[in-house]
Length: 322
Ligand code: FES
Image 1 (cartoon, protein in one colour):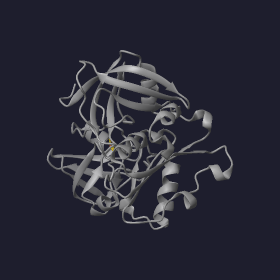
Image 2 (cartoon, helix red, strand yellow):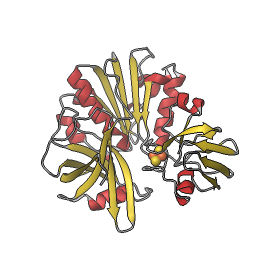
Image 3 (cartoon, protein in one colour):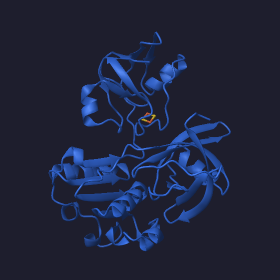
């Protein structure tokens, strides 16, 4: 168990519609939990047989509470094993090693207006944000988009929440006027208006490009990717691990982190698809070919960091500070 890990026990397991498992996790010792900020996630360690995975899940509970953390986990048939494992392993009383909470998706708490857009399982961080914005007395609206009303999770929680009237449901199988219409539903761009988007990649790409195209500043369009389709194509290149004195070749289909690990140089990885930031490594020479969803546009342009779990090289050689 790593030094900053928690040992959390499943206290409640609720099967929500849409194959979403809503878990309430408490400290196994009964102690209070560290505080967290809206938008934060937990890293869950999933170990069973030969499986040894870390997966990230956004906290959906009220950031003001410290007796439990709540997360929602979508059973994704296309997943690489994480969601299946959580649905199978997370029985009442099961304990998990957990790291965090960590926040890569913070709220601008002083914003005059906040618009939260959650698609499917992307609702989870929005629930924590809604609770925080309500507690602060801020102006906000939460657009919650799903395929159909009968696969919409957390409706009971939203129906009884004091901020429930701020939630606008959009179901794909309903009439056009009931579906999310970004021309109608996005506010006019303003320096003090902030948008937050989380959900499937297509949903996020649509919201982000529409919002930025409508004039919302990039810095005001906040995003959190749960997973991403990583493009691993491209020719081989050389990676020099400067501090370790090791040079490896990364061929197509392999990753920098795996090639270095095989040569005895460990870069910690968790999501392995460029969304969590665990593997970010300093670049000393060469130009990265960024394939991740974690770094900001400014960080990409600086070329001083790379997500070693998925990104590649635009130059024949990359020199890394490992
Ligand atoms: S391990 Fe998550 S971004 Fe690389």
